[in-house]
Image (cartoon, rainbow, N blue to C red; front, side):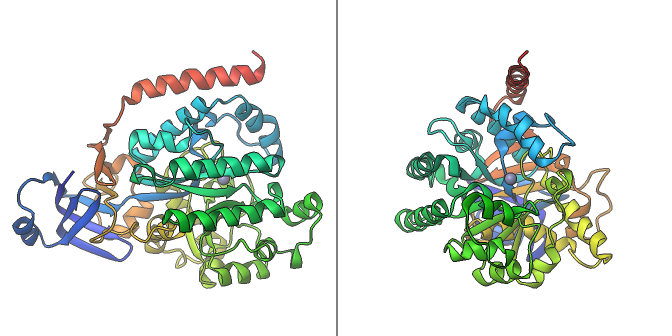
Length: 443
Ligand SMILES: [Zn+2]
């Protein structure tokens, strides 16, 4: 579809342009700038969107989550990580069918789009027919689908990743597959090497970048867990050094969390150009600690933002995540000048795009993918407006989202999701999540 967005304020992490026009043709941005020039060049045959009193921004990107876990939202809270996983999360997940995975992801995709998120990087279990990407395609969400790999099923893990790459990588112009060794303590050294081999071969063969996405040093005792389980050395107590010695670190490596890093970790991660995704809400909720993001930035590490899964957040709201990320480190450092609003907004847009291997996403720029969110700022919660970056991080909520366009396709209009009947989806999820919970409880 060709779209003419007229009269709004363009805000991305590089610029603020007032009273301009943005023109989209098919799935690309073809013009950003003067309204009169836009009218002369693109006068007829375009769907017109009136953006007066509105912000036109690049769609937010959720750099790390597990969107199928909307089914487990609020199922188990205020419990320590290992008990939370072993007694609550894993028994529930063991009962989830491929159709349940797709159903949960469908709800997560709708929640994301309605809250201004146009790309999600999500890691979960894979099935060829029903998975997180099949859900994303049904509602027009851009997705990097991480296919989880574990040491207890190495053969199955490799088979799943290769199957996903064959059937889903590049699909619909919206999906990319990521190789997702779950974490250093659940992935053997051999499986790490196999994962990197697959990543490299498929990047070349498909011509579409493939990333490795994983959880790295979320827990403080990860080095000892790895040593004991795989009978290996973790040099200098550094998980990053251990991974580097396996040859898996590069600028295509995307590490969620990275809370418990020592100096050697920082050095190695920076040297290899690794990307870190910060998930402040989930880290706080599970009591895992606080990643030293200002230090990462000093080391020149590319940092993006994510929500993590709806079982540990319990929402997919990237506005909330931006605000918490900005506030948290000011408090830790007792310094209100660090993690300024513009830098945090950049993390949720351009930094995430670069981390996930996109060179044409995360900015409102000619030639870039047409993933655009239009926010209404003429609202009781957001008037007056002095500084747009400040509002994006400290003020706006998902209910300020008016229009969402992904790959040139309108999916949210006037704050309403137009791709499917949301009420019937809510009924299906309510029914099915209750059945699963009763099943786990033996009721
Ligand atoms: Zn996670």
